[in-house]
Length: 464
Picture 1 (tube, rainbow, N blue to C red):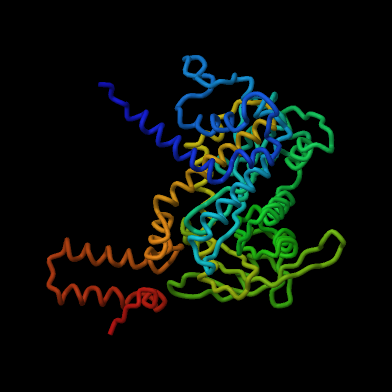
Picture 2: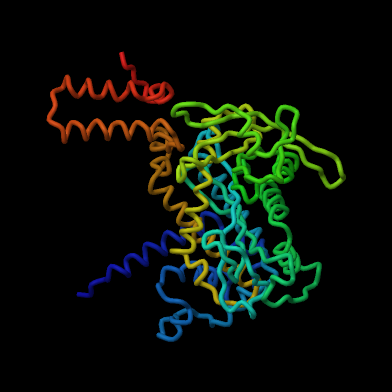
């Protein structure tokens, strides 16, 4: 009797799940719409399937060939030609695929009142062999605080607080020729390849607006745009509001060059903070002020929109503070802080792609088109895992009966986290201290009395 290895069973289950994903979201038809098709020979969907599953094989294509484990009915050159094809619109592919997943799968599982968000951020894409790689440049890595060879991977994603989906990306080079250490090729200005390379050398804020506009045209929508202080300047915030009709929640850059209108005066964030009285005690935030954001547009006209700045303590340094700006002045301070917390989803995404999905190590090509294709394939892998994670966690995906009897997955809440902490404290006191019931009650009452009023209200506890 032949025993089927556990690894074989896992491979069959994995391929079955990927096959269901391909059929549900019509990956083959989508690839064809994005110019990835062949009149004869090997079907494009077979090559794309192989590249998606390659991550789970624990071997690169090169090692599969060297160890005689490459069992596909096409050659390695076929794969290279597919990746190097500059006519395939990979940006359209990831935008459309993520839109189908969000609107067909995730939105029916969540209420309309939930705050879904667009998240914009960049991460360093390290690339070795810099002088031979097309458009590779000296880019600043904010983690190591050094310049490295590679790109800035500018990414737009969507999140509802539980599921994160990447929408699109740009591998940003440098606009200065002296910082570009790779080759710079000439292309027909009418081609997609030229447009892709041209955008890689533009300002990241301009490319971000273009990415948001394309996502909205493709059917994506959200209530807010989140990003950190690297993209937070008045012109960008106003442009997002005017062009995309989206409110922004972002970290404020502590710069003396950026000013806001407060009490009729143009002040930077440090001046605003120093002039205002801070909230005392254990408040969730230190300061909340309404301001005007002003900027000069391309026509030389001054544009302005109202906004609210909320200052909070820096958890890593209690003597320091952070400021968050929101263009929806009707939103409460607690909601601004809570919603901005969703920005962390994209940091988890970057970590997962680099550590587990072979973002930086999975492609050794020197072509900018191939690198763009590779990143889009990694994004597709993450979308598959994100869908599977949602299916495993959300009982409402099992069918109509479970949809009716199961609750919606909870969004990020402050009250729930606090209740868990208090309950853990109560259980620890009962388990480790030999006290009477009256002593425990008195201890707990004393603990509650020491909490600020807003925490008591969150716990819905009375000290009387």
